[in-house]
Every structure is written in structure tokens, then in C-alpha cells.
Length: 125
Image (cartoon, rainbow, N blue to C red; front, side, top):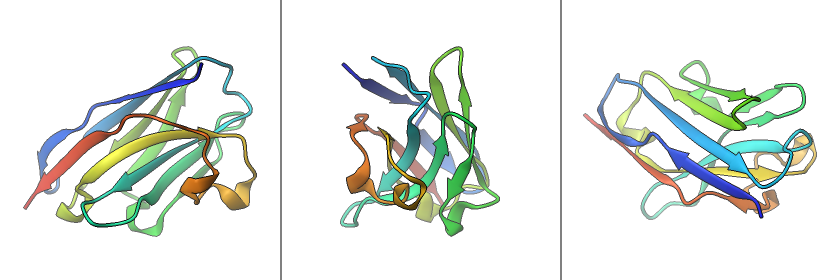
């Protein structure tokens, strides 16, 4: 049974940093894409970043490029989202997700098979 468990959310001032973690278990993820999505109140779930586990290829939404970095630790089966220069508009619940899919689909939440429970990130101005 696949489990994704996020941690690392919290309250931070604008300009600050947080690192989110997603501990994955239940299978070998070498053929998976791991994604981070976020959902603010009253808004649709939005793609943030993704990584192809096999070769570390990364994908980002334009609004976080240069500020967020997705990475992984193979030994720990964990994916990270390092978030720097945080802005109030980054406030949302952040979700980790996993899927076996092709590159064109990494941006679409409906294509992901497994989801974590989410972790709240709040950025104060």
C-alpha cells in the first residue's frame, strides 16, 4: 500500500524559507514522477513542481522558478520541496503526489495516483 506523508509546513514571514518533506513508502518509486501541488482556500489545486525519480528531471510552475527546488533522497525514499523567498501568495495546503505518467501530464493533478494528506504553509506579510 502506497503511503505519502508530508511534513515541514508552518507559519513563516514573507521572504522566509521552509522545507517540505514527503516520505514515500509501499513500493519502489524509481519509475514514478513525484509532484508537489498546492491548494489555497476557494481555489483549484495547482501544480507547483515535479521530479522524475529515475533521472532527477525537474519541472516547475513559472511562479516558483528560482525560489523553489524539488529534490530527493533515494536512501530515505523522500522528496523535498525547498521553498525560499516565500510570498503571501504561496499560502496554501501543499500536497505530495506520485504517479507513473509521461512528461506532458506532470502538470495535471488528475493524472496522479497517490496523494498525501497535505501540510499547511502560511506566509505572513
